[in-house]
Image (cartoon, rainbow, N blue to C red):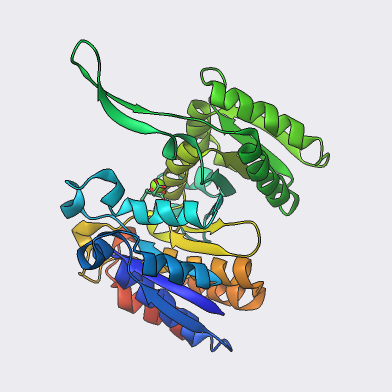
Length: 347
Ligand code: IPM
Ligand code: MG
């Protein structure tokens, strides 16, 4: 089990440390961890947010556990040197095109949702976000128009094969759940979305048992807080998925609880909390490590087929939350390390 551990910036190292403790506590045979530098931390050390040596470590690994990247002190750098390029580069270089972001309310956590408890209690959804295309990876720039005005521009595009492969991930995920797939787009305005929708409908023919629906992204944002229980699997593009998954996190209580898997064809994957580097609380033992710990569970499940230890981690987290373990993000006062202790004890 070769796992690359890229802690990154801000709270990344603290939360990753706790997830590594949890992985070690499982006593898995053959566990091999290799650290690597990413983000602003890597820029400061190697002059690049995703140095070659890190990329080589990532390529050699079966799976990657990732903390977070982002550092305000790098804001002045050219875009290709900014910390975010580490995660974007890994997603692209390793072909990690399928991002799974589950959002489920843990028992007893209804009161922490930004929604009324009776609405929040229905949430059990999976956002399948395309991760290798869209406006994220199109040509972009800032140019000067003939009349002298500056114009920022970013090209949004999806080729049909890119839509098709994420569609299959969405349909397969739906087959393993309630067989409901909602494709989110903006087909009333964008041609990119029109093609996306057409391809979704084509692929649906291969999954007659799955009920496919379509929703415009603005409506989806509204429905997600109005009646989240209507969603099972949501499949969407890179930009809309980025936005909706942050929104979903507040519906289940805290962004400090949401894990994610970014998968390539095959079993290789990168696993990271959906939260960022939170520089405002970095180094203060205030970050909630549960999203990263839950990402480690997803790593075991998706890259190694190790369902039993993955379920053990999730059960330990659920029990810790049930026992009242609360970090600062949930109005409590338990530090990063203490929350890690609480999970390891329950394992
Ligand atoms: C995420 C993050 C990233 C994204 C940033 C850090 C580039 O917000 O993983 O959701 O936009 O994809
Ligand atoms: Mg995001």
